[in-house]
Image (cartoon, rainbow, N blue to C red; front, side, top):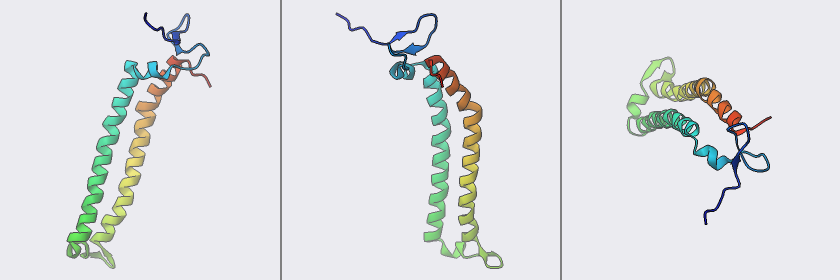
Length: 122
């Protein structure tokens, strides 16, 4: 005897809902659109994170093992170490702006489409 799921497709639509009208999240995760959405976010987040961590590790290693390089004065009291340290903040802001733009253009429309398909109403 096979067990029937309590989740069914709503009549006259392809919404994935349970008998109470709540979305069937397990079924949504299996949808090709959701899988593509997850793949899209992973393709952005992992490389961005890896690049930032490598950049930060390079800065830390230079500070630890190349103090003479970091002490080179660029102008006035500003040295290479200070510029590289401040650039850590700049790169963090850059990543934030790029991710925000990416999410607004590529992720948000796909999420809204999935919400609509799931029958999620506000």
